[in-house]
Length: 161
Ligand SMILES: CC(C)(COP(=O)(O)OP(=O)(O)OC[C@H]1O[C@@H](n2cnc3c(N)ncnc32)[C@H](O)[C@@H]1OP(=O)(O)O)[C@@H](O)C(=O)NCCC(=O)NCCS
Image (tube, rainbow, N blue to C red; front, side):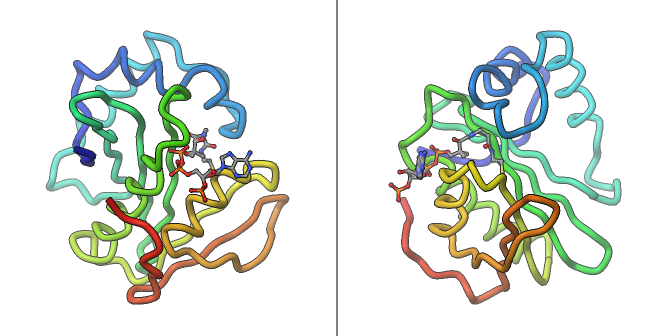
């Protein structure tokens, strides 16, 4: 069973494994230390439902294993930005696509967003496949990154589990 769920303090060791190894190649950062992971889950967990949400952060839970993190940033104008990272040993099983599909559903319902965007490095072709399978349309390139858009109801259901 694949689900998006809030992160807790107990997830810190799993988070540092997600943000390690080859997963950092296209994230423009170095591997997350154990200390950084502890601080990260505290920071995310301190947000309360009453806070104006600027970024939703969910753990990707696969049968009890924290396999990745997906994020939804939101702007005041109703546009959201999707991003994701999976632990390296979980790649190639469709998990990221399923996670993005679930995040898209959340974005257009609970979060009430009107449009979504995402981007990836031109060399990160797996990320481009994830976005295409989740229904995003490639709209061009900007600042050396490939840009994608998705509007409600435009999703092409090419995948799902
Ligand atoms: C990008 C990432 C999220 C993909 O996760 P994943 O769970 O492996 O993705 P999925 O299994 O849902 O789909 C991967 C798709 O990419 C394809 N793919 C994998 N490597 C590829 C490559 N080098 N070139 C082209 N396609 C590739 C797979 O074949 C699959 O497509 P298919 O279903 O049509 O065969 C994962 O590799 C990751 O976390 N990378 C590091 C962080 C990152 O790059 N995040 C995105 C920043 S923009």
